[in-house]
Image (cartoon, rainbow, N blue to C red):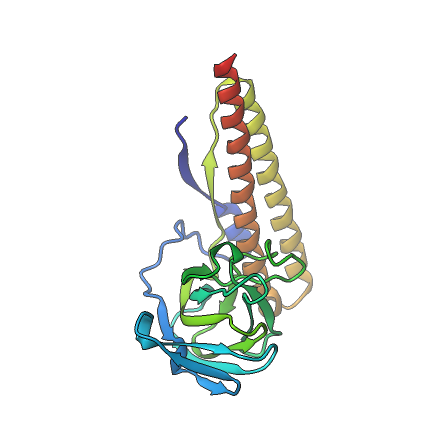
Amino acid sequence: MTKKSFIFTLIPLAVLMGWSSQESLASSQVPIRIEAESGQLTSPMEVIYHDNVSGDGYIMTKSDKRGKATYQFHIDEAGVYKITAQAYAASIQKNSFYVKINDKPRFVWDVDEQHKDFWYQDNVNNRATGKPEKPEFDPYFFVLTPGEHTISFEGREAGTRLDYFQVEFVKPLETAVVEITEPPASSVRGIFVNLITWMGLGILGCVAFFMIQKRKNVNVAQVGDDVDVRLTHFEHRVNDLQDILLSIDERLDRRLKRT
């Protein structure tokens, strides 16, 4: 079964909410890469030098919930960002950091426990109300404005290692773009998948309408960043729904072929 991907751009909603109608998530920005050993470290967070890692060194704490590494960087373009990192989980009991971005509350980043005992490039997630094996926000998106910013990685579980991390541009603040996968249009199961898909898009439209009404009653500058981040997380959940539906469709297809 073939899959066709396309971009669904909420142009009418963009106009109503004061957004521009940009149609692509692509950006020419190069990720900002920072070596972990280059930060300002607070003991017992320390640098461990090793030939087989980037920059010949990584950081870790030897004591639970102690130690910190702080980094400063500059960005030129306001937008929604995420962090990817080269990390190492020694075990399922040693696979997390606290992360703090600027003056926002710190959150728990659970390094993927399925990749313990070797270096792995992971999206920095935010456990929030989720579980270690299934964080609520994965990856975690956040808004940055032009200028200087600070990120801190704080010790949470001893032995969790960080080699380097990258601050990556996701999209401008003004976009409202959802990438979805078009399900097959033929057959009963295709109709079912299409129906669920458009129900999801209808929910997205209702959420956007609610946000429009909310912005009429509160300060736009105050809630604008939060709206962009929430929309980005919502877009990824719509994509997850698409993947689940397509998986169901493929299973139905295989079962029909066997019969």
